[in-house]
Amino acid sequence: MYRGILTLWLFLLLGVIFFSGCKKENNPPNVPSTPSGPSNGTINTSYNFLSSCTDPDGDNIAIRFDWGDGSASNWSSYVSSGDIVTMSHSYSTAGIYYIKAQAKDEKGLLSDWSSGHEIVISASSSNNPPNIPTAPFGPASGFVDTNYNFTVSTTDPNEDSVSFQFDWGDGSMSSWSSYVPSGDIVTMSHSYSTSGTYFVKARAMDVRGAISGWSNGHQIDISEACSGDITPANFTASAGSGGTTVVLTWEAPVDNIDGYILYFENTLLDTLDPSENTFTHNPQGQVGTYKLYAFLGDSLSDPVTVSTEPKVTTAQLTLAELNAAGNSGLGFTPAWTATTYPMADPNAPDNVDFYFTDGSSGSTGTFQYLASADQVVNAAFEEGKPPSVPDAGWRENYITEKAPQGGIIQEPTLEYDSADSNSTYSFKVVRGTDYYYGTIELGSVSQTECTIVNVKVQTIANLRIIGQ
Image 1 (tube, rainbow, N blue to C red):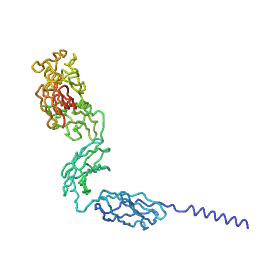
Image 2 (tube, rainbow, N blue to C red):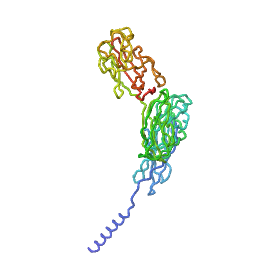
Image 3 (cartoon, rainbow, N blue to C red):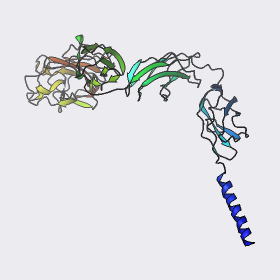
Image 4 (cartoon, one colour):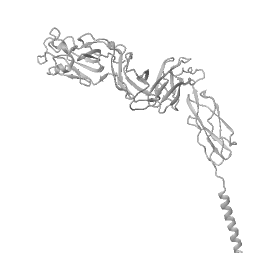
């Protein structure tokens, strides 16, 4: 009897173990399809969206939607694996929304969320979206980790101002630009981290939230960069004829190359033969950085750069009238930082380019001037200068009360000009056989002193380009 009961319990235990080991493991549903539905709509209008999903175990599934506006649907009724579920939703605010779907099987396991379907909701059906932009304009080729500019424009049927967004083709998009008038151009820049072929697109949004479709794509081919013995050497900039063009020169790299690629402020200027070592550019008064690459096949050297940006001094300087207490002289450090100097110092002729004076023996004359340093010993102009001011060695410079035109300094022709409050002066100062051009912005001017609020100097000899 006991042996029979023991045998029965043993069979029951083996059966439990056997059936437990054969129990099938449940798997979550697959990720649902990206919801499909309209891509455009207006507020307070209901739109249908649908998605489907399969379950690895063949279980029935339910689907819910995330509407992208902070709300989500309830779970649908359970349907067979692979069946389509449709739900509707309306939006109360204009904007761009991304709708996703998630599935649940009968045993409660959840899938991951699907990718999002974009819908653009406008405030009013009477407003027309902007026209589809032109394909972005930009370079057709480039290299990794280098910024490139792309421009785009469109018009709006209602003459609304528009904003632009770029799809860079590498899985990223720009933020929306500032609004510009219908028909205006917007420029944005982007760099690519890996080589490949990319298609840059753009779309526009008006001030009422209506969004155009995407433009055609602009193709850009990005290659890997390399460094080493193909890097150009001694890349320099100098002034061209008349001081309004920039002459770039360089030396060839150690190893043979296929050519050079030259950029100005991320805009392609030219592709050059390997035998070339100079290029003249008219930047139309703009200043910035030139980048030169050498290339060999698909490989690119590190860039060599040279800048035409002026040296800027923004710290406020005060010049005392020549016969008043304080520093009257204005000059530059070896690094071209503007600073003040005492005119009575024995070394003043080596430091001072301009000074503040009323052109008379007193310090409260009727007229005030910014004058070239050499005018301090001009008896007809400077009567009764302090006896401690040196009598020789002063530089002969030029200054004119005139702002640059189109980023270019017009040739100064005067050795002194009247000092007026809140005025801009163009100047040139001599160093050896070369001149250096710049601007001075005055703040307040009184009989005994003047303030200088900004000084720019172009540190490339004889170049009159100072920037817009």
